[in-house]
Image 1 (cartoon, helix red, strand yellow):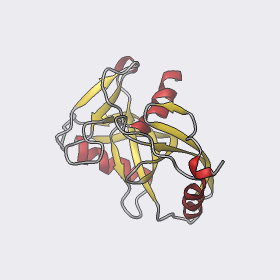
Image 2 (image 1 turned 180 degrees about the vertical axis):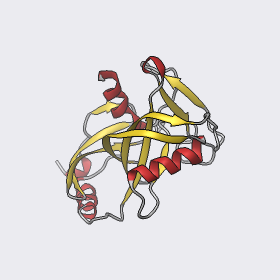
Image 3 (image 1 turned 180 degrees about the horizontal axis):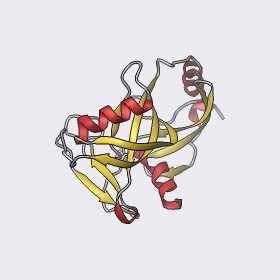
Image 4 (image 1 turned 90 degrees about the vertical axis):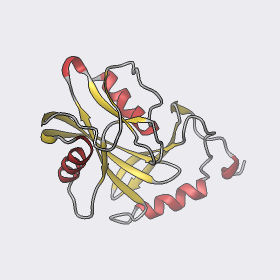
Length: 189
């Protein structure tokens, strides 16, 4: 069977398919492929995956968007989720807050800047937790998830997004596919 006609790997989460392990900036990472839940999942050929993997071995990889993501931990095991604002890819989907690194920013700098810009809060304490790599139709992203345990200020939805404190199972929907592996980790924490 030709690799470009093989069925995609079994899906573990809605809208998300495990592609396999790849080298990204010198580290072995699991790569996921995402598509909106209302669209059929696209097949990623072995040739396309090999080409993508080759581009990821460059450090820093021009094909990879670095994203700082916050899991704000609230009372009774709750965590904050926000909706994607109007006009953005995946508009209306629920996600953990955060955003892209600016050139030469560290993880902490990106996380603090993004949460101030999006939510109007100042991060006082956080710890890096896990990294997920997701191939979306519009971009390849490396999501650096951080547990945020202390912050100052009142939540302000500065981009017109909605917010909800959640526990598992979630009450909000639809959820951005890249959030599912971390939601799974939260269920086991």
